Image (cartoon, rainbow, N blue to C red; front, top):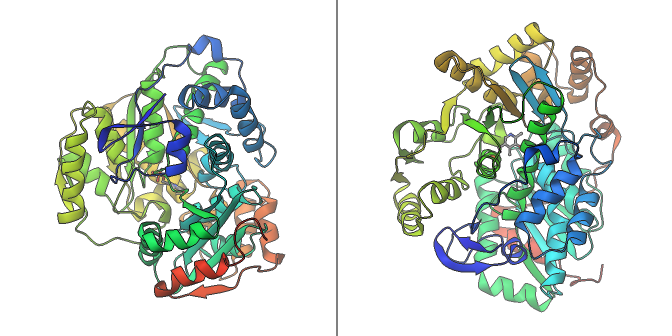
Length: 493
Ligand SMILES: *Cc1c(COP(=O)(O)O)cnc(C)c1O
């Protein structure tokens, strides 16, 4: 399997090379030259999550041996997940919640970031790269913690995370500042998420800076969702979920399902599209947005217009105006038209705007306001005694609107992307718990009562864990602090 750039089809890399590079020099994203077909649902029914993972990764990463893939899968999807099934399903009538939040950081980012370090490590070895990899991350919360956990103590790697001092939830902040591991660094930034992201992008693009690092034995890499090594592992849970529904008798082999995804960077929903192209019978992709409804507008009108104010919502991991992975979707659905991509993406960076009408009616776009998020959290709790986080509630709301409009009764997999415990404030308010004060941990206990479950120990213990990182810097000094953190040189500390 070779990988092309969405902006230059003539580029041809192995899977390992594409994972190491992260993004193509031409600004494009790496895509597989063709989408492989699943071996037949009947043959996979008895497989565990790990076995399905090996099959799917093996089809995409043909430059890896099956032993290498097996080892990566076994190290990634082990007891660090709260559930043996890795991704449990919760069936509530026609709505089936695919709980993607039982990993070490309680957000769906764990699904890919627990395996990416092992894929990257193997790719480096195969390609004879001896440098130490430095993963630079700008985060609004979930990605930072998941990357820190994923790369913690992985030999040959270091991970440096920048988060906006006032831009993450109290739990996310504590999760990051108490991070253990000899190769992890966390820096609070006097600025917002855009400042963090711009600073990191500048470091990637700064040739001199990269040369200085190279002399110390370091090479920069990225763990954000444009890396194809994050996309491929996300296909697994859609296949696993479908198989499980057949095993449980909810579906018959061949029955069609819909998938509803709370969408930010378009990575999770794109993985569902890949699963469909691989042969999983998916009928509709319900693309759900919050008040930042840029994708809803795009799929409804054909205009992608980022000339608007970013809104802060209760689903912060979806507060985004550039959905990078949409580029891959347009590439595939336009018949791999790399020239079209160049034209549209330069429109986006120069004018903040492009026009493109998707031919496919595979996607149903919709959005949820803050009031709707609260309404549906409350409603589902009353009807089914089940509590969702605000991101999942966005998907559930769009799903409900779709059902109302279409009268479609296909079973729908709802991608449940975060534990309610991570967003307890909004959840408790939605459930009518009026005063919860400022104590974050008090809120966790309140929620625990309502959910009839224990607060996950890794969240409960945060209260007493020591803060291990005290770096604070201004956006102008991100390069300096990075050099300072790496001053020992590769393999020395
Ligand atoms: C990252 C994230 C999303 C958005 O996923 P994309 O792949 O960026 O579309 C949704 N919910 C949560 C909780 C997330 O962390």
